[in-house]
Length: 97
Image (tube, rainbow, N blue to C red; front, side):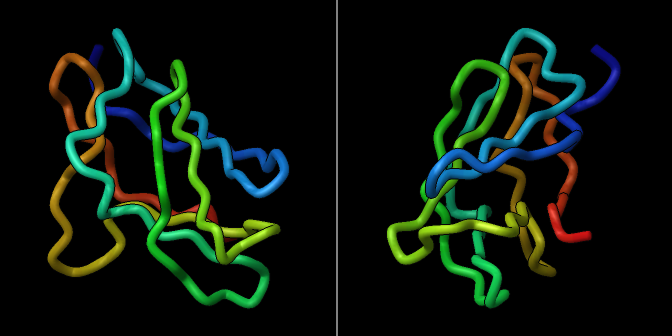
């Protein structure tokens, strides 16, 4: 695979955001989860609870019933925590339009 995971699109199922990627390679790997933030339509971001589900990331926060935005490694001093199994890190991304 020639790249780390690249954000492609998202969908919302209930109170969860499902994040889809290109360049997943052999699978996704989360080394930590503290680089993900999720917000509702009010635009207030909270730390997201995230997990890998196949070739996607599932994100939520109990304070947000209708998620609208997610961002990963969006701070100036972020550390990579999402990789493909080949060890290539994902690029920072935001689902905001």
